[in-house]
Length: 159
Ligand code: PNS
Image (cartoon, rainbow, N blue to C red; front, side, top):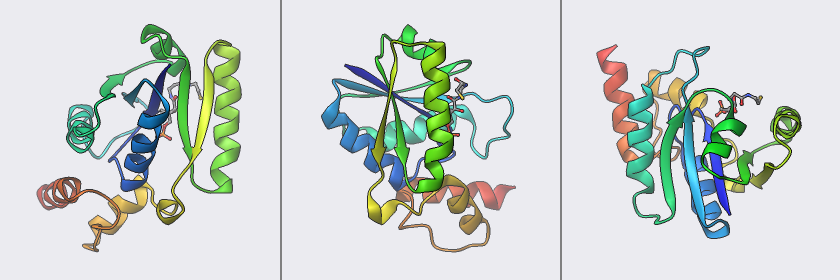
């Protein structure tokens, strides 16, 4: 079974990475799919985010990294995937994620959403918090890989 792990990944965090590692054991192939979202102004370009994810997942054989636009279920069908994978960190994630799973089910009944609980020790991490700490010069080494920490700091310096 092929799974799609869709998201913004702006940038990918250690929480995302943990989920990718664990899901790679459960599925034949996991496609990490970065959404080209016209409604959001991202911190990193789509190309950069794809490259960052490729770098930190290079050691996992059955991971593919891609970008997409439009509906996630349509992209999943194109990739012949049967599962959409999402992480749950805290209870407050659940409400929105459940709604999204229901909506996706009404759009395409054959595609199932599978939730994985985020590693307890990483459940407080979000891409927004990482960016905020980096902007104020705080340490983010326990939140993202060293390559991404460097990318964040150099982007902030150049802005
Ligand atoms: O990392 P994020 O921002 O929480 O990811 C949200 C994402 C990309 C999974 C979601 O916004 C999405 O699937 N967008 C694509 C448009 C779509 O399919 N919408 C219908 C489901 S709400």
